[in-house]
Length: 440
Ligand code: UDX
Image 1 (cartoon, rainbow, N blue to C red):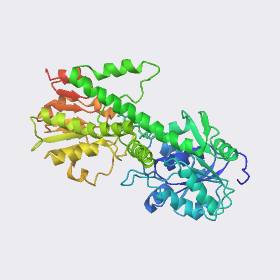
Image 2: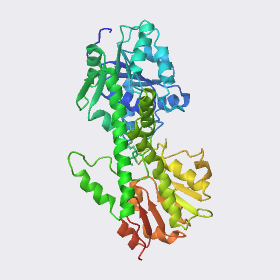
Image 3: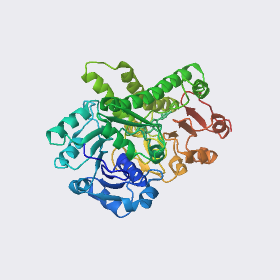
Image 4: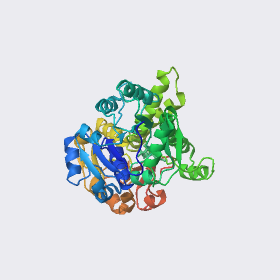
């Protein structure tokens, strides 16, 4: 490994997506000189002109405040030329087999062929266990044996990624030599959280295992919710009391129409594929994924039953498109399944979301975009809450009841109070709770 300089570092971050931008901006805040490289011209131009292509709480001011130490480029060589450390934050989408597509990682590694001056290459992208060893071998073949390699998986959740980066539960550093581990730890000086050091393979596994366990907790809760519906128990009481057990904790036990986003679906498939490739059938995780696939479909079925068995000639207001509140991200959002199921059953869909900007691809291109929840619900036979946007708590639901063709709300996130909704004259369905019928 090249001799590290003390203190401030020059970091080239590859990938200006959710992870790369947050990583770059936070490292700049920590005092490092950062250049973020992306292959999308529009994105780089926007960033250069002071814009931010994604919505992430606190990110735009962070980029603006640290503009003196944060630049953006399309040119990979320029990014690497003056860097001490390369951070790989490119995306690793699912291939048809469920494995992670590592082609973007390899493209980055390819550009490092002549980068003999580097101290280390760090992969933050989520990758299958064993990827680091393959990258290490490729670097060795390219004459970069002296350049350190580390895995530094990210655990930031969208919507509070900046906070998660600066105040993490842990910083996982997997490196096969202590100097590289030390260097990556030094980059995080100023970050408020413990460092967990380990070998590269274990670090790669931590990320996959953590996401799989979180997804398991949610799918487990959703199964319990289904049994609550069948037995008349109230999942909210159950979850609250179960979560008071300090061995279990209350987190990631909110029932709903399922988990989505850029991580859980892709990473759970990747871990299942990783196990399968090794000849092991990860049955528990397979069930966790299956439960999640069914969750939005069950919601649609319940709503359909309530509407008398058909969506044909019905209008449904779909409230919330993003995969969770606080983000404009629709990747693998349950809303996409719900919208396309409704459309294929013959319903007209009027959707509302406060942050998601562009909805021009299928199924969204066949829906009507509305600017307020009340507008979406006007004339609708039912409304379905898919994302628990806080704005929905403030809707004048009595007005909604009056504007709807039929005052029926399916709350797919258990955001609202059943008794209150019933008192306002609405039929209110939710997840793992008894349906209540308007009494106004
Ligand atoms: C997740 C992990 O939390 C993060 O550590 C990792 O780095 C990336 O993946 P993120 O995808 O941003 O982060 O969202 P998160 O808040 O974890 O929610 C994931 C999904 O689970 C969302 O669709 C959310 O609605 C759903 N969810 C979450 C539930 O349905 N119930 C819960 O109790 C919690």
